[in-house]
Image (tube, rainbow, N blue to C red; front, side, top):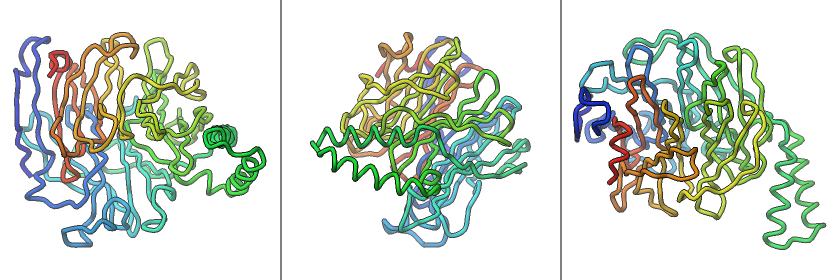
Length: 400
């Protein structure tokens, strides 16, 4: 499927500080029907190829897809796209993985320190009756992906998540909700006891965890997979230092009402996490870690507007902090912004919009910086296709 650039500003071969921007659809939604298309992630491969993944409806039902057969149905699979280095167009889309009868969902990728490609995703075991809450985290690893179509997988496994501090986080959640609606101490204790009984079942703790954005490859080579539990609004990091043979699950981030964490590492080894906010306050949430993601400080609100949608933060090669997100307080998600900070997020001096079309839907963005310093982003475009954008920091700093 040809992927036609819609707009080009500047020149890729121009001066380093010359602003440029280009965009394209990964596939033409008018010519290639994929049902509900959402939640993409992009990587730049060591050979310069681009790869994108997303989830979509499979071919079991003809379009139009009724609402019950979208992202929560049993025909959902992981789709993929590839743009070879130097190519003008994206290859025809293909299937990355598909588990029959259930929903494969929220895929993300990363290239690790050994140049292997990781695909992390969730399989929703209970669809359509039980959706996000039945998620089982899975991953695949490939050392052979310099090719058209899906990679050749070296291994595939599941990632059971059982973080420390889960009950403490749950207790804090009930304490907070009790104060908010003035429940009595006895009412609080009864609710908490019911939660303890439910959590005595290990499946309650180990299902419902969802990935979303790129895993982080720490400076020591460890892979950190940010996760959040859809049943309880609790986040934790899964960390492996041996290529997935063993995993350490960090302590739960203190506080609840958080989803889809995005994590970055600073030059001094400290880490920051930004969270999709499931609370009533429409601001991006943030937390810090001083021990590689095992433990996290208290959640606090940033000044960044947020309607409760996906976002991603990365540290650029020059030390700047970049965030791609929907910069408004409610739906529809018809504005998609890129903001840059040169003081670790205390202030955001530069913002430019990738999308600003009333009534549209542009969300669940993914972004990565290539070795040449340019930025590659992708995001859901009206749930019909994945849109790809290539630009540099100078373009963002030029503003709207």
